[in-house]
Image 1 (cartoon, one colour):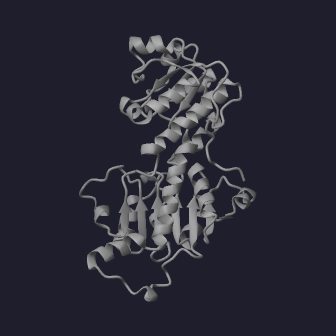
Image 2 (cartoon, one colour):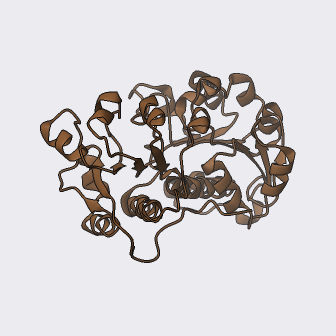
Image 3 (cartoon, rainbow, N blue to C red):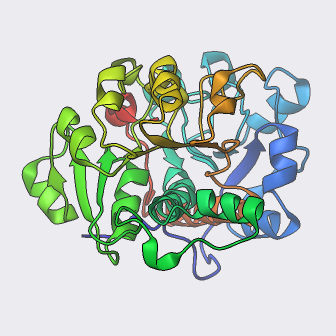
Length: 349
């Protein structure tokens, strides 16, 4: 099976550099567009002078868009609606330095035939790494045992460790073979675990190629020691993880969510956690930042992290590297390695 690791450029370009402009929030640009990143972009395109575009209605934006062939976008890019496209008659491609393009790529872009690329594959890598780490740490109960060690200043009797502790032979359930879900499956291969998958769009043959056993949604929750959610938030997945599914998990099972908080019935999850039936690792909640009074904060069996699994810090450079490679390929006439297809948009995050 081909790896989901994103393609990055290896050599400087030798063909014509297309005219490009950058559109995103200024704070996103300050984080992502380091001097090295800007130099890499300038090596494959004629980059319009900064600051980045964050408002397409200004005179400067309209003048910049007039001869832009590729728009390099990021978090906070305004929608590319018909009026914006009318001001950008030369625009032929959008290269996004983040994951979803739903916020700015409009129907007008698809009608124009604009090609779109996304760095979703690059952003999937740190999320998958976080997930793998949490699966392994939860199997060894590292966080709980470290907390007890700090409180008691004495070790437990390691020869009396429960047989439930450890990762050998554990069953990991993956909900959705998304880019992240597939990468998690790849990262789990060297480990002695059994992997189940629920994804109605994955055939048995595809599941066999992935090296996983396809199961129904109820079976995934009932048979897994760990359930990790990687499904995008769509109308069909809103509240998909129900009270019934959570209650069906094995005693002391681990529920991991790095997808979107609204995929889960959060009230039900809170109730199940307060009963100490399962443990949870939540990098996302609904809303993203819980109220200080929310009872989830009081659940010691829930580890809540501040939506940090995705690209941060030096990982942002990976997003730019992917964009550089995409622009280089496109300028050479090779097309995008990570295209976003209009017909697949309904299934993407």
